[in-house]
Structure formats: structure tokens, C-alpha cells
Image 1 (cartoon, rainbow, N blue to C red):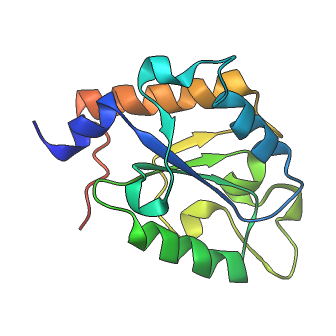
Image 2 (image 1 turned 90 degrees about the vertical axis):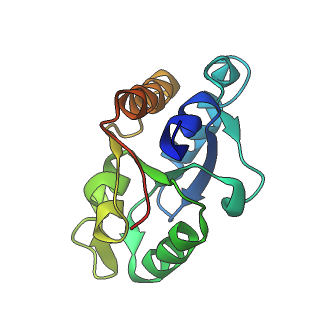
Length: 146
């Protein structure tokens, strides 16, 4: 069994907020609490970026946060997957034409799953991560390092 399929059974998520209104952050944290029971899918919050399998990005990516996001992505072990949560993480959202915003997370790191909304509901976030895990199981998303 390859490493990408191992992630499917016990993915550890790491949350990175690039900055914005924090609406998506509240929803991400709500989605990993016992009410929604993400552990039934094996999803747990990683204690460190070096233990994470899935990086959840929220907020519009600015020039400064883009550097940090790239550095965090490089510190993750292989295979590594990225989920962009919310309109800001997808394309900059309402901050898209700001002088310091470079756009969505995919301008800096490869994104495997987009979860739209402003902010998306906790059920949608959990559903998006589960769909990503199913793509891994089918072999359509590997997250392998190059």
C-alpha cells in the first residue's frame, strides 16, 4: 500500500489562517469538534506541521502570508494535500483587488480540494475533506512530492 492510501485512513489536518475576517477559521474549528465527530473518518488535528497530512488554508493569501504558506507546505511530510476553504482562500474573495493580496492559495501551493462559501458551513468542510479522502482511495489524488 502506498503512502497516499495510508493518509486515507488516518489523515491529520493542520489549519493555517493567512488572515481575513476569521469566519472560515471559526467554521473549520467547528468542523473538527465532537459535534461533527471528524474522528469517525480518522480525521484528527495534527500537533505540528511536521505531522500533518492535509493543510487547510483559510483567508486571502497576501505577499507576506504567501511566503509563510510556502514554507509550511515544504515542511510537511509526503504525501501532502492542501484544502482551500472559503472564497478568500480560493481566489482572494472580497479582498481580491487589494494591493497586498496575490490571490488564492493555489498561487503559492498546489491545491487538491476547494470548498467554496463565505464562510462554508462545518458540514461542507467535513464533506470536502471526506471527498478528498475518497479521491485518494480511488487514486485520483495522490499528494505525492516531486
